[in-house]
Image (cartoon, rainbow, N blue to C red; front, side):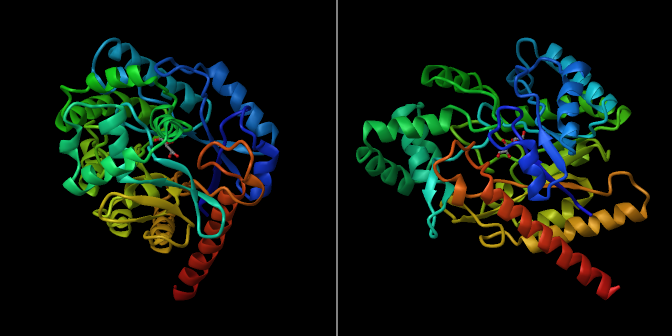
Length: 396
Ligand code: DNO
């Protein structure tokens, strides 16, 4: 069976481990959020968090994430030390019995949205991304030189009208949404710092960033192999360049180039249906089929998207991604691994974001990480899995 997991932000999360048990999840996805990016995670710190999780009758199934320091992405400053620290962290995690690590290679920004409280058709609240709002921030708030060139003429015009109608409160809210970091991003900036860190990437083309990613993999994967840690790179969210920054984990070609760079089962991906699915150019079912052999972790959620780079998050079984097909591929992959006697035949899956609904509304929520919305997603995954397994058995 797939391993049903739940992302928990540690002791400060308003949703407790005891509550998570009632959702049906058995595995916890978490990180040592208090350790600054780049520093190594000691066995003592890892063990402490692991024991807390186990005391609640759950187990620490996936680390999301061990963050990759910006210096590693740029190969500047202390990047070599940070790589050594990363290697030690992987070793320490493996030795403590944690065998899956999610990470990303997105410069500066982790995931991005423009609206964290989008009124949904049924009164719940979803997350959304509007290209004209993002462009308004980029052109008029950040004032990035030549930003207009990165948008269509239509978007540039819409962004102007949109910006002219914004109140100072709207501008502040949008700015915070973009630069303060969404949960898990670990980095947060002021506008001035943000302008500087973006400027630092001026000389880094996508080709260069890809080379830096490959150098990172060449250093990390042998250690991950030795200590039995399955690495799982998370796709860019959304899967296109933002603010002129390079991104190299956006398409099927990107994903293939990564898993093929070092052909090892520990050099895998986090199959995030919502991140890939936000790009109209990504055929998510096809990606699942072609990348199944390297799926080490999955995030299931749905999106409604268009060809103008707008999207909003949607209920798991609605939206533009065929979650049934993706889950079917994952289950078949698990069966293949089982037949081959592999120890990684139970792939951890978590419901990714969920709408704020019912008792979530009015509560302090990590954007996307609601209680009821995610529980609804997990319940749907559980039902879908049961149905898929029964139909596979009947057809055998
Ligand atoms: C957002 C998350 C991402 C993810 C990182 C992985 O909800 O999926 O923040 O954790 O990109 O490194």
